[in-house]
Length: 67
Image (cartoon, rainbow, N blue to C red; front, side, top):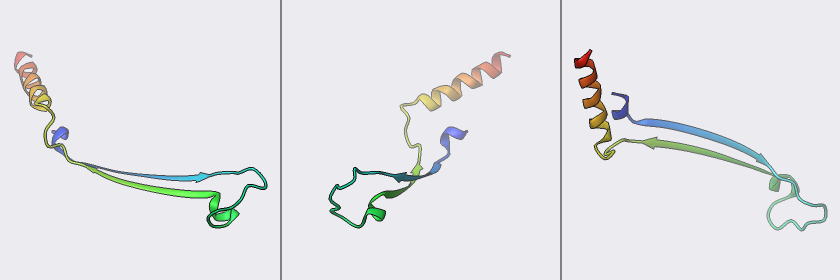
């Protein structure tokens, strides 16, 4: 049943970078250039999985019947 349900996920990243002393600063300041943050949100909806989901359900039903 879980193979039919949508999946929601989130990911957060915080990165710090350093540069060699004397390197020119093209954007922002030394302080703002050294830090970056990313936030990723995702949603997956299983629409079609090549009939593998249906085949797995059929195998499970047969196993239950055989026991």
